[in-house]
Image (cartoon, rainbow, N blue to C red; front, side, top):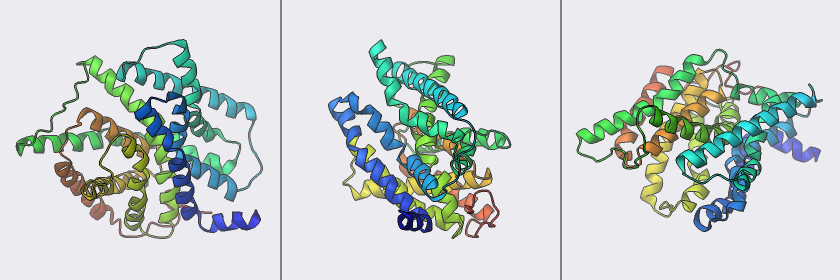
Length: 338
């Protein structure tokens, strides 16, 4: 066991990718069963699968940084119960408001089980393992990053709206075709519910805790932010295969993967830039990711060729202005240190 621990400790990024794909793809069949066959009893496995990057990061941190426990069990369990309750409310709100699903005590009880993986990840911000607590601290910290939180909320929506406007000027029909009923405050409510659902169940607690929170700092300890983002983008789009296959996306098309990798490349650079600029805030990266996916839901006919040019241009500006080809100082908060 000591030899395995030493091997993982010396190759944490490789171990992270292996474990992330093992968890997510290993449980990915559940998503296909839920989407295509209506086997909703497997929904808890779906959220465990989407939490693959976060769970991998937590497991590897626990294994490689063996330390005496600190704090009290009471603080952790309070955090868990709060996270469990809030996650349940967010899930039910999305089910009722967005999916128009009926509510019943059975569904409420089943939801309590389904959200357990997400509640676990959030509650680990109060872990009694010091290394895990430090690793996840920025997931729930707002102090010092309010400006970056606001930017992360509006950046991708603004770029999507700009791409939509350019697409219309070019004669491309990119106006939203998915009519989320409601205007004014009702529409704001729909957007808020969709955003918090993405934030809790996919983008912050599931993905960004792992991709930006764990992998990127370790990669940036070895190379520049630009190279780290390029390498990370090799794995990040591929990780989504289980989702896209279940949703009926053309995953056997080279054209689809070409466009997908381009879209994710600009997003990888942008999210990496936000993470580094906010001094390693997982929350900022998660909010930006959730804001992007929420906006995409309201613009399903977005022309991604136009969007890729717009976001790619923005990413290029970030690369040049921040000289992302240069390695960050070893004491930078977004660079991993033992």
